[in-house]
Image (cartoon, rainbow, N blue to C red):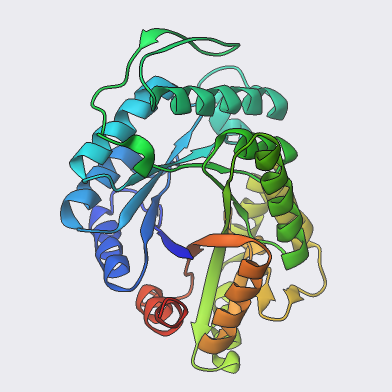
Length: 333
């Protein structure tokens, strides 16, 4: 079981990202997610800076397949691995926000974007092995070889993120790890089963995991109070902007967030809360409760097939220490 801390996307706030990275390494996290979003810093540059200031924590760098070529992505990944003694992984995301996609040209529909993602991951996997000649719908390579190369490039894991059937098929066919937004446990189990079965048909194994938020306190009452206080702090204007963003996305995962907003009861299951669906454009489901109940809920997701968790902590600056010291330390002991 592995735990990854999701770094915030804060323009021009390198110091805060570095601070959180060091805290995560000190508090039982195995890795850091460095997101790839237009409003944030370049993930490769930021990850290289973090790598120089940390010792053992892994760096999971996100890359949107609409905005990069698989060869240049592979070279960046290999270079970062050289610089960090093999600590870099790649999270492949497909993108769904129409206004951002439109800035760089033609807007392809969901199916076309996932055909591109499939080729993107296929080329990345081939470049691990040596020179590549490839003819596809989107990419052509002629005897392309990625340098530098690690003595054994198997240490770098390729994640595919998404909630759609297309994402699950790409993950099961080509990735090392599949990650989706958290939802009710039965929904998560069904998605994971699809990926595992697809991988098995292709003679492969794929590990599955979740993007999820955690709000943990000494007691359940304190945790729910923190959750409600955090939600109340967002203005009506922020909520409207969040909904507007979701309406301009054709992501299956984002559409599921919109569906969660319509629920009368945002508590999906004991200690599983969809309150963030009203204010977050990424993770919309939180585990809320005492340290013991949060750990128990994590184990329920493990029983559903999760082997890793990419965690955000919304309410306060000290969430890294709180989650690491009182939840992860017990789960990993």
